[in-house]
Length: 83
Image 1 (cartoon, rainbow, N blue to C red):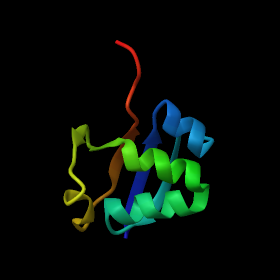
Image 2: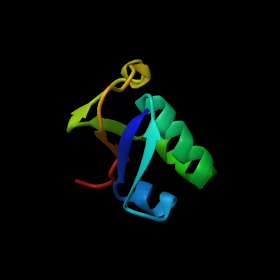
Image 3: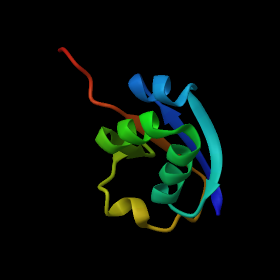
Image 4: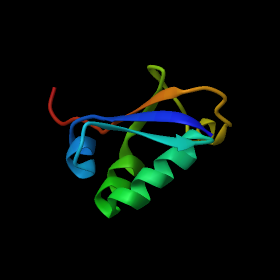
């Protein structure tokens, strides 16, 4: 397990009740599951519709299960309305 800092943007921050947190996880998927279970269904729903960025790069759902070998920043970026 490695430190995973999760940064929440916009509606994700509102659902999480915070802007960021750091947890220990072995994959991005595990980290997202942990915070979703801890923070509840509102955050789980937002995570489900959000883009997930790792080190500034959007990753696919399949990439989220890859093992982590070093500390990483994960960003939860929900869709934005307007233009």
